[in-house]
Image 1: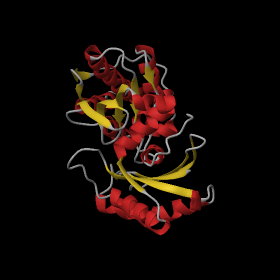
Image 2: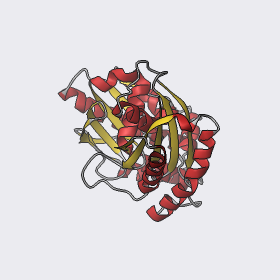
Image 3: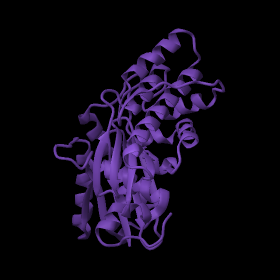
Image 4: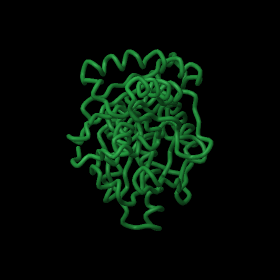
Amino acid sequence: MLTLGIDTSNYATSLAVFDTAAGEVVCDCKQFLPVKEGQLGLRQSDALFHHTAALPELIHSLSEKVDLTSIGAVGVSAKPRPVEGSYMPCFLAGVNAAEAFCAAKGIPLVRTTHQQGHISAALYAAQGEKLFAQKEFVFHVSGGTTDLLRCEGPDKIECIGTSTDLYAGQAVDRLGVRLGFGFPAGAEVSRLAAACQEEIRPKASVRGTSCSLSGLQNQCENLLAKGKSPEYVCKYCLLCIAETLRRMASAALEQEPGLPVVFAGGVMSSDVIRSHLTKQMDNVWFVPGRFASDNAIGVSILAAREVGQWPTTSM
């Protein structure tokens, strides 16, 4: 059985097809929403328009890779998080497309959330279905979240720590746009950071499992004003985020030692962040960038799970 996943998050339109028999994603496609030069995001009305315009083209692209008539269920991100009051208009584009597809074919529609999709993609890419059946800590680190979650798979999610102000992805994007890159700027910031060979001692503002990142933006501005190279400042920014996450995880593990820690979200695509955490922590899981950033992969997996077609093999 094939399941289709649709995710229309704040900055990317994405589709994915999951093959339950093979236990793998057979294809996926994604398109970032256009953001004008110098801007740090989109109004929701603009995001909704761009998703609506992008979906037909992406569905056509997907149809050239897989037989969409074989789709047996569709999963869609209907809101950002699985909590009361969570809502963003941009997800309406995906919901409308999913409802139309399911009505035309007479197949089940599975409504889930963007955050659960991130968690599912990360868990499945890390250890297949194994992590869905146990407790773990999951970091969801992106432009809209810096959340530390206590999870039992994607079904039971409790946020036990977050940023009290700026999110990690916002800090990265603001630095990137400040340096002249387009939004989102994570890939360019990571590229520059990787070119810096200087040793840097990162700072972090963490209290228990919560953090503050607003000072990081000011620190980066001050470093640039003092003549530090863009490469140095980018590496400093990413290492500070990595150290922040490490300290949050350490606080959580003091309360529940031994639980695996899984990192999801677009910010976790950074090799600089991964390298720092890998050297400092044990029993941590990182996933390929394809599964870490905004995508519909986890949504397609959740659709298969919901309709009773849970895979028997892992990626």
